[in-house]
Amino acid sequence: MMPSKLAWFTAIAILLAPAAFADPVAPAQLAQGAGGATHFTPLPQKVQEDIGDIRPAEDAGILSYFHGEAAVNGEYTSNASLYHSRDNADFLIAPVLQGSFNPPLTKNLSLDLEARMEDFTYVSNQQLGFWGFSGNANLEYHYKPVWPRVYIGMAPYYYWSYGSGRLLTSAIGPVAGIDQSVSINRGKTLLYWGYEFGEYYASPGIDTRQSHTVTLSATQQLRRDYYAQLYWQLMYSDYSEYTRDETRDVVGVSVIHQFNPHTFASLYVNYVDNASNNTLAKYTTVNVGFSVVLQY
Image (spheres, rainbow, N blue to C red):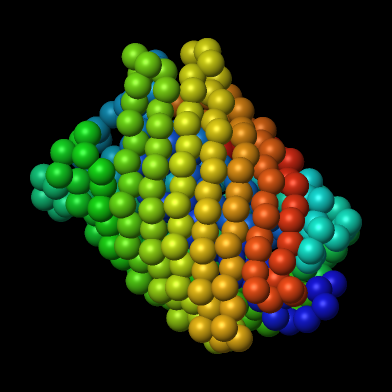
C-alpha cells in the first residue's frame, strides 16, 4: 500500500490524465491506466490509409462517423504501488470499451466525441484496482491535410476504487492542443508530434491541476501487417494543493500486428520516471505488456 493518500491520488491523477491526444490522428494513442500501464490503440481508422497498404475505411454516410473499440490489455509492472523504486511487481488486467462519433461540421471543422469504460484489476494488489469512465468532446480545426490540427474541448473522468467501493477521483476541465502526423519513406513511416494543455478541476481537490504534455512517436511498417513504434512523452503537472509540481517521463517501444482491417495485437515495453517536489509522489517503473484490439 502507499504510505499516504497523497501518493495514491498523485499516481491516479497523473496516470489517468489524457496523456497523448485523444485524437485518432496520432498513429498510436496512449491511454493511461493503473500501475503505470501504457496501452496502445494501434493505427486508428482515420489514419489507416497513411501507412503502407492499409486501406481507408469505406464511406457509408453518417454511420461511417460512428466507431467502436474493444480491447483487452495485460501488463507486468515492476512497481504496482507507484512509490519510489519499490519492488512491488504485479500483473495488471485492463479491458476497455470505447465508442466515438467524429462527424465533419464544415470543410475544416469537425467534432470528436469519445466515451470509454475501463477496468484495472491487479492480480496480487487487488486493493489498488479501480474502474470507471472517461471521455472527451473536442472541436477540431484542420486547415489542410498537411498542416497541424488544432483542437479545444472538455475531458471528464470518474473512477471508483475496488478496495473501498467509493469514488476514488473525478475531474473535468478544458483542454487545448495542436498535433500533426507526417507520412514519409513512401508511406512506410509515420512521424507524430503533439502538445496538449489541460486545466482539471477535481474532486477531491488534491487532483486539481494544470498539465502540459508533449508527445513524439515514429511508426515504421516492417512488413505488410507488422509495425514497430518508438515513443516518448513528457508531462508536467502543477497541482494547486500542496504546491506540488511533477514531471512524468515515458519512453517505450511497441510491435503491432494487424490481423485484418479491424483486429490488432501489440507487445510493448516502457519505462516511466515520475519526478516530484513531494517525495511521496516520486516513482519509477518498468512495464511489459500486450494488447488485443477490435475496432468496428
